[in-house]
Amino acid sequence: MARSRLLDLIDLAQENSSAKRRELLREMTDLFFSAHGPQSEPEVALFDTLLVQLSNEMEEAVRAELGARVAPESKAPRGLVKKLAQDSIAVAAPILSTSKVLSEDDLLDVVRTQGQDHLRAVSKREAVSEAVSEVIVDRGDDHTLGVLLNNEGAKLSRGASEKAVDRAARNRDLHEAVINRRDLPPDLLNEMYFVAEARLRQRILEQNARIDPALLEQALARGRARVAAEDGALPPDYDEAVAYITELRAAGDLSPKVLARFLRSGGMTHFLVALGQLADIDFHTARHIVEKRELDALGVVCKAADLDRALFLTYVVVLLGQEGDAMARAHEYGKMYAALPRETAMRTLRFWRLRRQEGTLAA
Image (cartoon, rainbow, N blue to C red; front, side, top):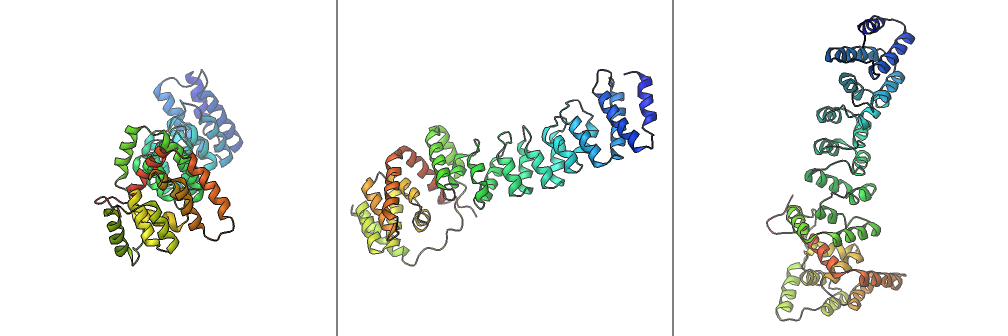
């Protein structure tokens, strides 16, 4: 860049007219990115300083125009880009979502200090590091978290993924975003089963069927530190039921037909204890399935235990009771049961068994 041209711009930077300063800002920006722009480091630094000075004196609309101009430029003046990134969201949005000039430290500074609009803009970047995502998960509201989760370019650490799943479990609007994450650990994915709608539950089962056996073991190992919380107190007849079911099992008399008898007679605690022992799941998981009428989940349990379809339908009909559409619903559950591969059910059940592992209970 010719020295005389740079000196002319320095002189013009002292201009008091707002209209002329605006024109100068555009001219300097165009010149910076032209073939005649600054070449040496001192020239680049001077240009950066002048652009920051001029932008300080411009109204928001002009700064927004400047932000949109420099956002896609990989060689944009760093000082100017950092300043615009901390500006109002109308100015900062294109910078935060696309600029390659911002470093991880720059982005961390933004997400630690700015509001939700800025966090959402950062969440849309082509790539978001684990460190930046961690702060967004901690500081972002559910809307912001949804934007981050829907971005496959955003990397989430194990800790951030756990926090995201815990929050998604309380907000239906986040269910699909978290379940669709390709990098979500399988054990965390399966924690979503009991809160997700049927369509998303089926997606979880399909993903379970695709898990490589070696990866399955790794996922189970990682998941053993997490456990279902707020299970609630055990029923008064729990100990009595455990003792009776244990006797039946020792005598070889514990069978799926006995479970049906418990259901018909109203012995719900005995049924739940027996179901837990038959399928090797904890009492609280069994109780949740039955009390919430999670009959598709009951189908997973029964298929994993290799129960006959007719017995599963017996349980379904008894649990549905006098509901008007009981038979129609039972027919649909019967089709689901027939289509569910036992291997998929067994894999899914292994994740549910993580809900209570002696010695690994988490608060």
